[in-house]
Length: 169
Image (cartoon, rainbow, N blue to C red; front, side, top):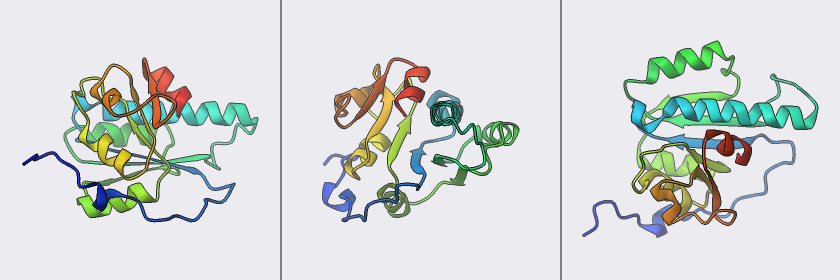
């Protein structure tokens, strides 16, 4: 019995229609909103990535996001995350629906494009493995256990720090 095992047949994504060329990239993350998991870094990395995309496209627009972020979870850092998102005008492209069940999370993964996890103290990363099993490339730090199942440049991108994650995203 493996209590943290993942049934790959349950997480395997169904066939999906191609996304419209002008559709925003759907980034998703799921974690406990505790400081050691670095949920604030999810918002910071996503904001930096969005700014990089905006600059490279030459639009400079903050009203038509090239990317949307859904951050699932709950915990003591929620207030801090909400204040950061409000202060940085992220309401039009970031949602934090709270904690959801595995079925809802799995379905959301199937409708997403990328899983982001900036955690530094991740010995393995069950949430990231679930995202990989659901077909998502994972953007994560290379110095964590996520590197045990994500091949850099193949099944995701592994970066040395948050700046590298933002550029990879």
